Length: 143
Image (cartoon, rainbow, N blue to C red; front, side, top):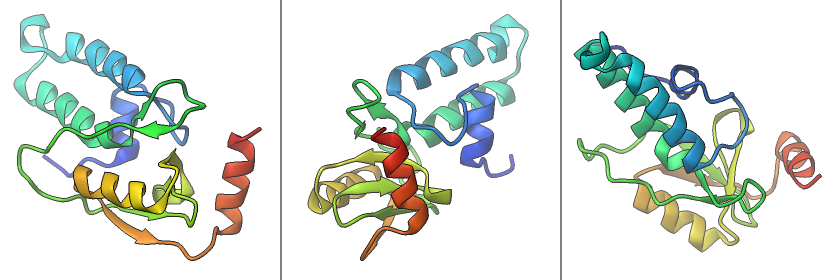
């Protein structure tokens, strides 16, 4: 099985790209895809494994609560205990940015963001200041 990207996982679970999503939206996407991919419904073991891998990849990126509260969920530990090859960027104010400066959440402080990344098994880097793209993303998110 080829390595699954975030974009491919979002597409597989029909979660619109480049926008934050909640754990509930992830669960709905997984459930819908799993119903079609399950071997008992005419799918295959390989298709179901791909759906589960997509859910597991996206779980640490899901937000809790209403989209405007932007709190990352606590990730379930991965079965294989590997860490992600993706590096999140932590802003000086505790915002989490993923690949392509996608705003993933606001942990309210750098220490909380570091703790979240450590718990989820995600690599991170500390940004000394926001990039122009990150500033635009935050301005758009704050409305």
